[in-house]
Amino acid sequence: MTLGAVVFIDLVLLGVPVMPGRVLLGAAEAGAASVSLWPDEVPGSDAANDFRPYLTPFLVEGKTVRGAVVVCPGGGYGGRAEHEGAPIAEALNKADIHAFVLQYRVAPHRHPAPLLDAARAVRTVRSRAAEWRVNPDHVAILGFSAGGHLTASLGVHYDDATQLSPDAVDAVSARPDALVLCYPVITSGEYGHQGSFRNLLGPDASDAMLEYMSIERHVNEKTPPTFLWHTANDGGVPVKNSLLFAEALSKHRVPFELHVYPEGRHGLGLAAEDEHVATWMPLCCQWLHGMGW
Image (cartoon, rainbow, N blue to C red; front, top):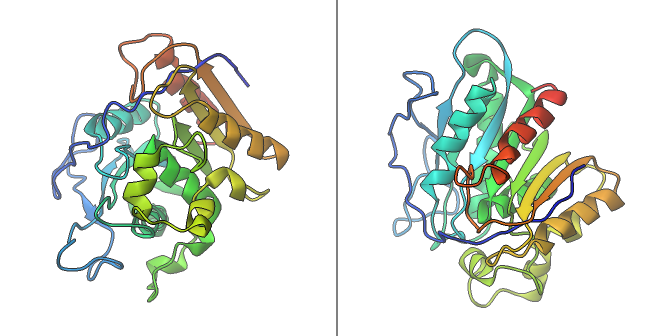
């Protein structure tokens, strides 16, 4: 485990979503078009809020079966930051890891819509593992900021994340095999990012729901192994969020790796502007490779 110091600032609470159907190339395999998570009605949506969540595959070329990572961009549950999507998937591809960028529902959609989307994304990757050359026992989920909260939520609440009328895909496990949390929102308490919780739960969330979505309180021995990074002087989402989650993992003897960098604004993504903080991606890939990705 490496300890340093970290900075976390939420640059973008409202990101730019990728348009449905767009084919993202670069490191992605040609022809890997976006995939709707539900073929018919989207659970928890209505005519007024008709965004259809989807995955965009970024597949490493070749016939080798590999581990995969579902990527959840941040955006305060009010948007999805573009720089925390495709560029992350392309970096994972360079490390020979399949990636899938998830465009999940955000405000005005409320909980449980984003959690259902994240669970469905993991299930979709597993259910199509043979087609996409994915090892179904090595499906991780990675998230930034509020996307990190979504990632951590699935890591503890995966048993609760099933639509009311399940289908064959919902019969597949939604439990991620690993979590990657990048300057995540974790707690709804003193150190919480209130805008994210307002967008997720509405302005009048009950104490019980705020407790349920304060993720550090629900870690147990079945929580997946976790890689976390943050910056110590993060002005948007305090580093205490990562520290609380790491402390809970340690209490339950769940393996984790934590990197806290001394400086850096919130929303850095790959952190190309800071060569020290940018070490997070190779360190993360090394961690994943060590577990068989």
